[in-house]
Amino acid sequence: MTDQTASPRRFAASVPLKGNIAIPGDKSISHRSLMLSALAVGESRVTGLLEGHDVLATAAAMRAMGATIERRDDGEWRIHGVGVGGLLQPREALDMGNSGTSTRLLMGLVASHPITATFVGDASLSGRPMGRVIDPLSQMGADISSSPGGRLPLMVRGLSPAIPLSYRLPMASAQVKSAVLLAGLNTPGITEVIEPVPTRDHSERMLRGFGAELTVETDQRGTRHIRIRGEAELKPQTIVVPGDPSSAAFFIVAALVVPGSDVTIANVGLNPTRAGLVEVLQQMGGDIELLDPREVGGEPVADLRVRHSILRGIAVDPAVAPSMIDEFPVLFVAAALAEGRTITTGLDELRVKESDRLAVMATGLTAIGVRVEESEDGLVIHGTGGDPLPGGATIAGHLDHRICMSFAIAGLVSTAPVEIDDMAPVATSFPNFEALLVSLQQ
Ligand code: S3P
Image (tube, rainbow, N blue to C red; front, side, top):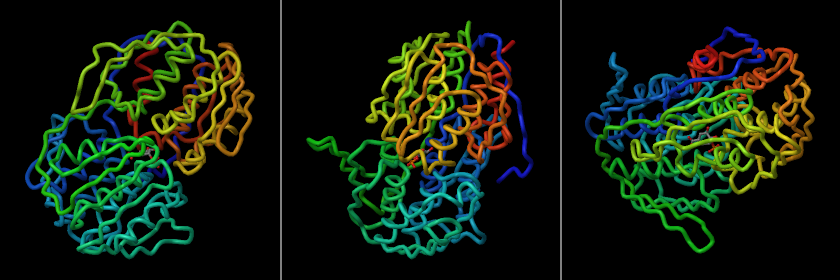
């Protein structure tokens, strides 16, 4: 899955960005579409699937465990599922590439099936903590042996029937929540996840859409109690995947910071558990207009018209962090162009993403002339008030697609070009990122 050839690129001061683009399908929903379709009985159809390396790793893994997955020439994907309980033992190690979502959610699926699977990944993924899923899945009866520190490569020996669990999430993580719910799918009785801080709810929406018995109760404290009845029978679905707000984020910020820009981004998913960035940028004075709000595949979407704006630094409410957890790297770039200081806190989870995003962003922004202070759980960024950044440095992307794309956007507003050491990781989530950028520069 991993591209071994480095692709360095330079991004230089840009002409105004103008025009209309459509961004690729949502990564979280694409993974779940393949996994749940592969567990339904019969044929599901998926359009708008993100065809990035992460999602293709999920497709390959589900094939290795018995599902039939084909892409038609018109871009529609057809998936014949094996039924809950019907996953087969993969013959080789499952190569998860760079994808934490594939790894953690598939560990959940394997945990309650009578199969054994080995998970391997690239250098970035092999440094990420898996203890957060190993703990609950072991409590459900899976036997998991990992590399030191709860890392990949690791092996999951599933137990069937598994033991139902009531699990309180120790951190705000949709991947951990989903791993437990997916393990619960093939577990007798009720499996419960208690979620004190709400995170993206695609698993809940889609499990229900596929016919699983799943309830969500929110108590007085705002804690969500999500319960799934196991040994479910999933019914095949026709799914339209909305555009990924986490990919749209790069073009939203680009249009806000490049003077003279006016860009419309079609079909952007705006599920409230994902839409924090739009809210925060609007608070900073960003001109973002929501056009034609509607529903696609059970998710709220709209077209976004974004125009160049003078942004003002703010203290970002840490409560919105889970709804924009993947968007902080590019928010930091927006903050670097804002008037005054932008203060962020409560972001410890950013340290265990594809890279340590607080450290890597602080180092990279400093290298291109931005004043940044790094704390344990956030960054304080002193913006230029709209003046170009000095630029003129080479940024190490650390195999992290969102770091690479964030600094590409910074290059568009820098006096001297910004070089990214390797743009290849961008293909994990946004293969046509550079092509779309060029299309807006015509
Ligand atoms: C995801 C959950 C988030 C997010 C990741 C996708 C998902 O991870 O960062 O890109 O699809 O469930 P965490 O659960 O680690 O916060």
